[in-house]
Image 1 (cartoon, one colour):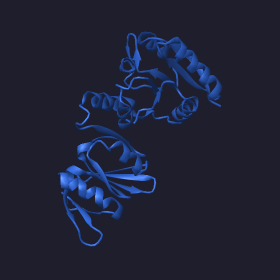
Image 2 (cartoon, one colour):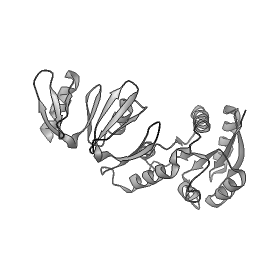
Image 3 (cartoon, helix red, strand yellow):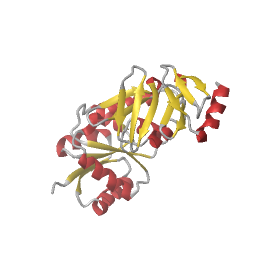
Image 4 (cartoon, helix red, strand yellow):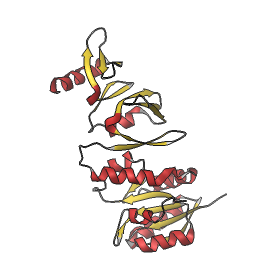
Length: 251
């Protein structure tokens, strides 16, 4: 059995020791190859030990975890960010599809994240995700964000303002974009409903989440339909109709 080689990078000694104990006790398939406390020592240790997984503190005394990753444009390791800093918005981690754990780290979540990291051999274009994360962190809260969408074949970086609507199909979600292309991902729609709740999207039906910017009109008719700017008509559920009416009255 291949042991997953884990490197721990955190500038607080107690946290390094706690993480090391947690990996040892909760991750029988993993072994800690090094524990570092700065950007410089982490870069050096990654080169020396070639870890499979790096548990990377976001804020260190001589820089950030992102400074470490700048030294590895095509990393051969998986990164799980460890953060206590809410200025590094959790939303931004989720939009960029980056793995993160909040301090104090939950042992079961850590074990789960390491197992997941060991399974993902392709490293998922980490540089692309980090670029998206840093872009989103620089934008005002209400402005256009980018989201990383992973399909079986590719990783796409998409601006929210280009998503017209999302359609649910059991545990899959299909994104319909302004250029008429579509992207299907293996995540349920409810996850995106929550993530997009502050970004001008409204759930109009158990199967549809719509970008408000593309609403053209509402046709009452039987059951009611929402017509988008490309003339696509989507059904509105009875349960969601009142919320939609309130929104349209404010537009």
